[in-house]
Image (cartoon, rainbow, N blue to C red):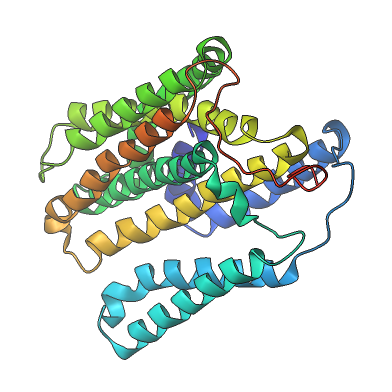
Length: 323
């Protein structure tokens, strides 16, 4: 988070926006090599079969709903194409739930979401990344187009967010180990909400110090939230399902990132530079509201290590989640 925006701004300034895509190539190669060499393999006692229908339907669900949010301002929310997308998304969503509830080895087992702690963690992870990505995009558009900052300068303004996340993430992990996930989740919720509220009245010439403060608060909240969300999702299930729980939480984060970008773009789409500050105000209200799912997750999890208040169903000997 610290290196990305600043490096991105420098690349845009020096080599143009296409360089942002080229820089990812060596990073991906390095990640593949390091993973192959240093990361040990981890497998469940029995390999699970590939769920192709579930994968296809989930891809359609996410693509359609995110696509509607991105293209809605351009095509019109009540246009025939939009209504066609709504219908497609609804059918795909219902179809995904129906298919997954009937497969013996589903991509995402709907029964997992009967557990309050697990479903709270998944929603909380989505909300945290909605807040993060709404913040990044709205700040970028406002600073560069509304106030004339360079890409490098706009990236530098995000540094307090990176510092807050970097310092507080390991602190949050230690708190989870000592007192459980509830306290870090509450702290994360308070900071994210406070950061969003700082900018709900943003103007064309809002103080840079207030922008830096909001960035710091949101970064602190982000740092505190991640460790307890993963802990809550994983510890409410048997060890054999920990990988599935972690993967679903990670998917929720990526979905939240895409959703946040789409929503932020929808708020300011078609807005002139002078009106970006006012148009972005609903986005900052959304960032503030993203603290509420974290509070909900805190209330549904235990207040001590290992106690998550899970209500995940068991289906009898030999037929539980361990299967």
